[in-house]
Length: 476
Image (cartoon, rainbow, N blue to C red; front, side, top):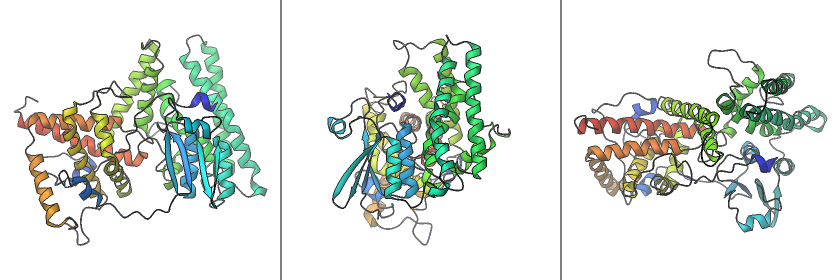
């Protein structure tokens, strides 16, 4: 039921996000930072963001002929199906985000079901609006048959059979997960539902093997993968937290479903999946958020509290782990582009007096906005350094696009950073940890870009906490 599965949460869209190392390249791989390291030179306000933007590659994207209407959260599984198809086919598209708790009237007038996703397709001076994810997948496949995401007609039966079973497997999984959380369901009933779910996974594993893998219907991503992806991705992270069920093995352990595990590995390496993929931190944090959303009269039951603790713990572990990640240049660049384009939204969320979501995360004061902006600009510069966008072709020195004016701005910013007081370093560290915790994939960006941003932010938080401690004589 699409209406049931759509996320009810209203989450502020932070379209800015991600960061990497500028002068401190060691931060990108989680190495210790010492006082001997130079302070990053980031252009200062007001030309700061223009100077950073000049480091981005020129955009040559064609005018999109498709508009994707999806949820603001990036949580809707049905939107994710269409999103993956658009990325796989390399079709230029634009996005319009729909607030599911306050849908605009124009959207309800345009889409009879009022649900997401929907797409608007423009061709030959005509516009066509299509809704319902399965209908959209078929229509886009018809209009844009290359690369093919369905086998030829004579070989299509197996793929169609796998697609047809998706609803049965998803229902089995959701019934089992719901039963585990329902105190009125007996242990025998839970065991029976678990067995039915495992039977469905056994059947999917066998179907992948029959098709040769590593994807559901062979050697390339198809409509079957787009159909199954949303719930398999979520289950892999969330079922261990909510139901004690491991779809994927612990590190070093053999997989129960080897072909499904091979599919996860292959999907993670698929370029088209990069923007669409959620990450372990985001899906773990979402579990805790849903426990709070569905708490009776705002009060968590003992079972909900236990799930929240596990989810919060898993999310915290992911934040710590991200500080050890070495981001790819593509992930760093994707992150830098987002933060440069949307830094105002991040500052606004970090200093919101009445946050729309994750109110349990302590926001900063309004007067800390300038400190948050400086942090974001610093992080964007570090990301650009990771992406190889800071040095000129000769290597070693910043490109001279801004000339003397940009050099002066960098000098001013260096002085600004060096002159921070202990409490200001503490605010900087708090801001870095807050933005890390607020960053959600795929809402804000893909998983690899989010990991790059969090890694740099967590390294910066540690750096600033160390400086606050040293400058305060150990008082902070």
